[in-house]
Image (cartoon, rainbow, N blue to C red):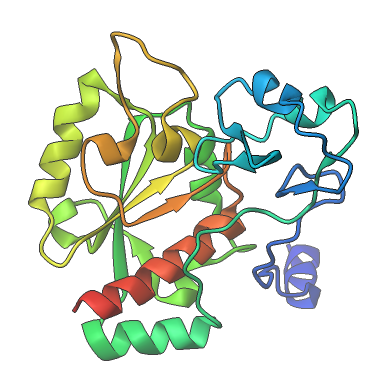
Length: 240
């Protein structure tokens, strides 16, 4: 017992700074060099139709992209490559202090988030759970998950919307107080193309409720989710 306590007191802080750079082998943002000849092989290889050829160059819809790497493999000219930079939400804030001050000044309390699983494979849910562990420590930003949509400022939706859960998503959104935000987390929720079109699927989250911020990835890393949550806090400040 004494050795355990000694190890705890001697250990360093586990919490890390948020970084959008992953492992060197991570499949992140796509890069295209000058060798691209516009052949379209990358677009044909994409299983979710996230790639298209615009003006002779590949254009990617990151909301649909599952970062499978098939487009890179299909490129005979070796013009496409993955960087190890993750694709983040567009609206960012500079620091956690700025976020906490903005939330406290406008709300007088933390940003409260209600998670809604609309039909996910649970990959995004596992990564979302990691945001609250000692390594990422979401609570240091003044953001916390709540059990009821009536207590929430934002709902964070994972998974493509299935017909069985379409009504639940509508009811959750309707139960939230104004102003309210919606985050589509992951390729299924943001793009809706991962599972194609079937009788059991409605589509992406924006087909059911209005979406304010989308987080690309399959699944997104916890750091990307935290950056998006911080951006959502800043968006809520503007709405109030």
